[in-house]
Amino acid sequence: MTVSWTKHRFSGGVLVFDTANTVVHRGDASRSFDRFDDRAEIARFAAAASDFRADELGGRRLTVDDPQAVAPCVLAIREASDRLFRYAAAAGNIEARHLPGLLRACAVGLDQASGEIGMSGQPYGDPSLPIAFEAALAVSALSLLSGDAVKRLKICPNCNWLFLDRSRNASRVWCDMTVCGNRHKARRHYNRHKAPLEEVSHA
Image (cartoon, rainbow, N blue to C red; front, side, top):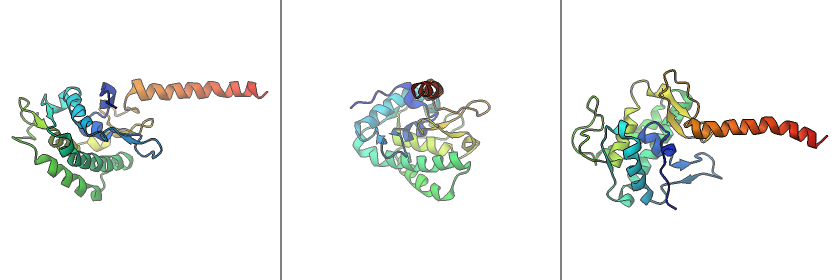
């Protein structure tokens, strides 16, 4: 089934978290599923990310020549990133043992990069040229290893997605207030009003 890659699916704040969040209900074996099980979705995701992550990418378009061929690299970066940053979001620090796997996966992805990357103001390189999705994914992951990014890593308590909290005082709770925040409020409202009704029904 073709996925509708809407704005909500890019609530991670950075490309690498949007990609990690393509595993839905991660950690819940009874409900979890992978949107990239259909490898064609990798290319569709990259096309949507080119628009929704245009600011991060500096306007550089993402390319996927062969979804089947790039899938092992994309999934390796995705899983290594999720493992490292999910732990860091919970613990507040990066665990050293998680770094080698991420660095190895990113090295493979960066083999597909061309031209200069990492310049000030243009970490993804020349915006007039496309960049391989797996290379951009590696840049996105590696860029979070410096600065204060670790202090802004969050896990949404509703959907378990990773997201980067860019709010001024790092006070965001939900990956997307209009979706997860509203669902939480609806549940709280339901639970608050359910108890009195149950009391009446059992009177």
